[in-house]
Length: 296
Ligand SMILES: NC(=O)c1ccc[n+]([C@@H]2O[C@H](COP(=O)([O-])OP(=O)(O)OC[C@H]3O[C@@H](n4cnc5c(N)ncnc54)[C@H](O)[C@@H]3O)[C@@H](O)[C@H]2O)c1
Image (cartoon, rainbow, N blue to C red):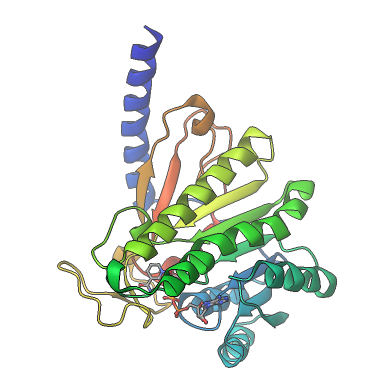
């Protein structure tokens, strides 16, 4: 009987959350004020990371940029200052190297302070069929797209937990939700990134640290150069532009969990709200970034 009731409950909640997320396409959720937060963006030397840096800059945050591309970061820092950032710090850091992540993280803590919004954005793609991809590139893909998230969490999450305040943002991919021909290693690394972020989010809620939020962003193809030459049957890659087009605003893919425990985790709604589910945010374009500024 319990099983039957719980199944009905999950079905009803699932319908409700779909309706709710549809309504929020037209009535956006209140954004939270992030002025003064210390925001670290990995892979901010170009593409989405750069665009996010510019958007975060305009919101009065202190920016910490990480990349392996020094020139790219310099340019991002310049643009961020132009967008209104008062403080921008940039560091060369290869996120795939655990020891380097820990070393540079310590330097950031000393020189800037505790990071309160961590955006794991650095990513790479081999763009080769699985059997053609060299082992070394496959390993690198997993190290950058997945393992780096473990190390940055280890470095910055303790302070967030201690303050019960913070936000973990994972720039994953729609290829982290569905398999794609020719992207086996990339998809695997992004599926893992999604699973990791979701699970840590649940762990935080289970341990009562509901002040530390989690947002998982799953963009479709964006025209940053990463997927140059890639073709899709339906829509072309979205432009990498901060311009907001209403129809591109965001697309919420409700992902109801089926246990009461997980129901208390929802990145977009009041934590511990009984009406809840996990949402994976699919951002067809970068326009809506930074996404984690929702009030919940
Ligand atoms: N562009 C797309 O279509 C698309 C779609 C879905 C998801 N994504 C994801 O969005 C994120 C950003 O992608 P993008 O399109 O802006 O790509 P991009 O290539 O423009 O930017 C990636 C950045 O990460 C940096 N980087 C690479 N390896 C690194 C390392 N080991 N340590 C630190 N920095 C490193 C690069 O130097 C670069 O500046 C990636 O995680 C990507 O997988 C992109």
